[in-house]
Image 1: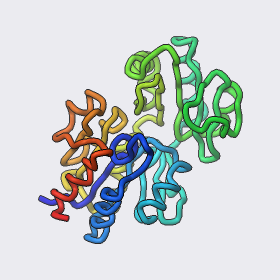
Image 2 (image 1 turned 120 degrees about the horizontal axis):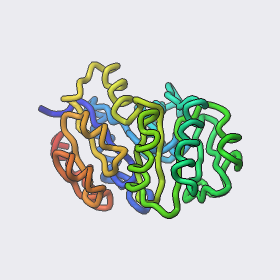
Image 3 (image 1 turned 45 degrees about the horizontal axis):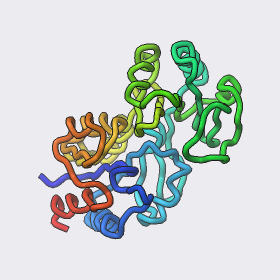
Length: 263
């Protein structure tokens, strides 16, 4: 059966290292919209990183941001729903992680922006933090994402260690190999919020095709009826996906959408 909804990750899936969504991919996405097939971007990005995507793709539909913690309207460029980590739970998790991993550093993403500890070496948003201070100070309101960075550990090892000490309190994942952990509220993932979007449209998981490349995509790929990993992606994703497509520089997702929907 032809899928009724397309869910796709952005970075590493349809956005390449040049941070561009290709013309061929944009054309495929717009063709789906013209056919009445919704396209939902399901990303680890915060909402404040979505303006360029909205402009590039025509300000249509909704996006699941921050690994499921935000539902974002691309037309009006505003948050529709959010599912944050409470201050109490977030600080408890941070304290547990710091006790186990003393060299860990934290940042928080809230509806008001990004803040981080001085020891947190940001790779993105450099110099754009609303505040730089200890976690006890910057975590003063519910956070859509708690970020933890360890300069001496890879992301897989960091994730495993973090789950040992606090994995029962929150949802933990990662989307890069640079020692960065992404933490959401318990029970919140790309899959849970995508499922909310689909339920509102009367679409079941079996009717969804999903594309992704990193561990934060695993819940979504497991939930969707048809899943695609991206060549060069994380080994766990490649093992879990039903099929594999080439990377964004080769228009892998666009080529497969053209095939699936006879575009």
